[in-house]
Image (tube, rainbow, N blue to C red):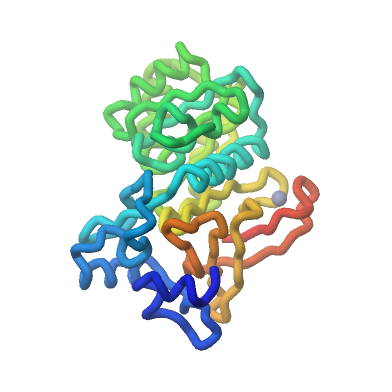
Length: 285
Ligand SMILES: [Zn+2]
């Protein structure tokens, strides 16, 4: 994103350094901008002429709702990121991925063109998978156990706070995941769960649990690598280590709602060189 371009966006305009790059920013900066510009749902990151086809409300912010926006090609790129994440964990065409999350989560939306308008090929369609979503509230845990029994998904994507009710519902129903489910992945609304949380979830569910790194403000989704334990980044993300021992992310496919130098917090850029995917840039957090 060039200097002349970023100056068009009020949120970035007021943050530009002399080099033309914005000062790394956080959700708190976005919330503060939104609080002082209540009539702008995108908090200064979408200009009027963009006419975005898809707008998504961010889940992680407080105060006035803040939205991000995409056009169809960007939505497609984002779904490709999700397909890449599933592929690294192992996905076999003809099998089913099941979600226990809100239907508004990008992890769900990007799965299928049936879940969000303008998405040409969702992650499931790209990999020849079927997708099923159970609403992301704890009271739906028994139904999730039923989905496991009847639909027989081999891949599960779960919200962190639903792991415990789901494990308990499985126990009540007498259903074991081991031998049936290839992997489960655990997401947090913003950032990622800790390794300890994922390990504890794996123990309670009886299946390997991978972590997902999620930051909706910059359309970031990345999965934990089974080999090195870092998050492998799709090539459309650029990670930059800051002097504060934090990492900033720039998402190159985001044009409608630019995503430049988002500070995702304490993390380390691990560079390339994982045997599973030698060229992938990696983040450790
Ligand atoms: Zn790796």
